[in-house]
Image (cartoon, rainbow, N blue to C red; front, side):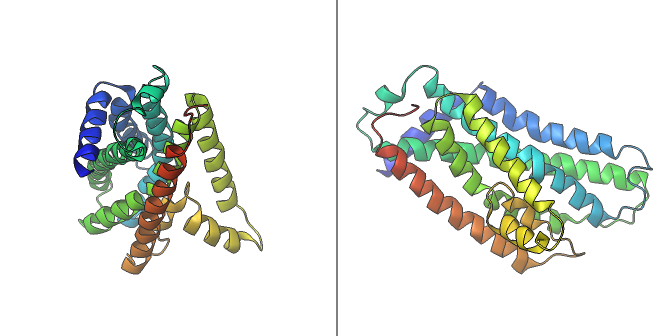
Length: 260
């Protein structure tokens, strides 16, 4: 079983070479880095911002927009490799457990996402150094906070990988899968922005449990880093990703038709 799973993963990785999914894993994080740099390119735009505020602003941009959108497209394009050629029927007749095919899709999507995180962190670090130098900030780039926060956010994004893998495989057509994701993300952001007596309730429920905004929970609004805060978010994301991933594999494996 392990050998079959490994062979399936290698096959999927080979199929990804040169595809839009692979290019997106490179282009989107670099685009996020450029957008952050341009938005704070003038001294006035970043005037009065500390290292902590710069970090929060840049990571918030990645977590709240670029990363979820990247997952939408990655999962959709990975599934489209079989949808476009109508290969699911043939693929599922191979002498291998059906769930392995779907687990492999999630694993490759998560791997591409991890590579995007790495590229973003490197580019974002360069942004912080350049902006800090322009503003003559005291040396003190928050390396540890940056790495721990992005690591926890990656784990917190795993439920989203599982959900969009299911959407993209279950329903043929990129537009439908991406549209559902965009609508869900918009709803989460609307709830977060709610003010009034229900604000605290919405904020707690959405940030802690809503997959499209769970990574934002890693951005502690207080100065400093809470390991408990990051660890709890990472654990929720990890467990949620595994459970949802198992549910996705079970549901898709029992279906006679895929992409209907």
